[in-house]
Length: 353
Length: 124
Image: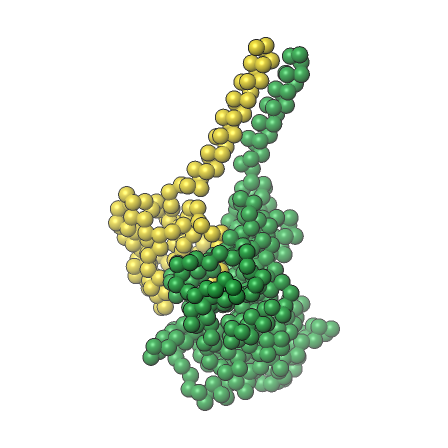
């Protein structure tokens, strides 16, 4: 009689010990770095802190490598210039194809594909126009319309030829410049995600300046809860979206902008006009691949809302939420049930949409 | 009760107490008072507890491009003045909620409020 009770007691003791020992064993490791002109946070969970730390360092290394390949800002003659595939391609525009890294091929293949699909609402070969606006400079000014017209002639993905077999890229007209500002961060984030995934991490969040990529669930075992920024209220959220094993990327008119005569001039240019897009305050794309989310958030920001919704709806597993310039929140039906909209955000929201 | 019964009761009590301890520990971590963490170039240079009792104070942090003047008032914190060119960090004003942050890109200064945030991250 006491025999089985003693056995039961021993089992219970073992269970308690295992529980107490095992329970606090999931540790969080988080690290931040300034990368690609933004602030990147990588947060991972697991049992072995050393392994987590090493994986995160590798993920950052991968992001830095992609950033270097895609950087189009460095001055000629510098080490950063020599490391950049985009600089090499731009330098040889109209002269000859350039042999580039396989990641550059992948990035540009994707960019060109979606430039075509969005009818140029997203365009990787818009560098001549963005240089003219110079949003990253200290004192941006509105360029005269004639200059914009001239630069638009030196802009367009149709000048871009990507040859996968030879690993070469050719920009066929001199003066046309690639600018991967709207897609490289998403690709780098996706590559960092792959590094974490490959090293066996099953719970992680990468936040590259608001470009979010997640693995698994959050610490409580629920889908990651991602806030969507209120485009006009600092620190405010218009709502949240649940993201499990996927990414959420937003393009907004509030990130880099200046105001002249009551008008807002922001950094997301409509490649077809050369001026900032004006239909939308922010476009949030939720889909698995962060590189795609980055590209599509730009395209959907630039397109008129009805076209943006049509573009997203026509793609597989791409969800879109728009906050339009007339303060309406609209989204693809696929987001219903995964989003919560803050009723006091001050935007119009018809759930029926 | 036999000796075995007593042992069993004792063990159940011990396991209950240990479980409660583990659960409470996890919870108290989540509810802990908010901390503002200030870092420069990724390294933490200062942490401040933000509570109603925190006295008004200001101090200077040396960022990458010069001095950043930071002000704390009770539960909130802001960049009052900075030597960066765009001064986005100054314009942002006060922050007071966990998960919020002020980021000065040129100075590579980050102020973030830690604690249980209502969301895991913000897409922006």
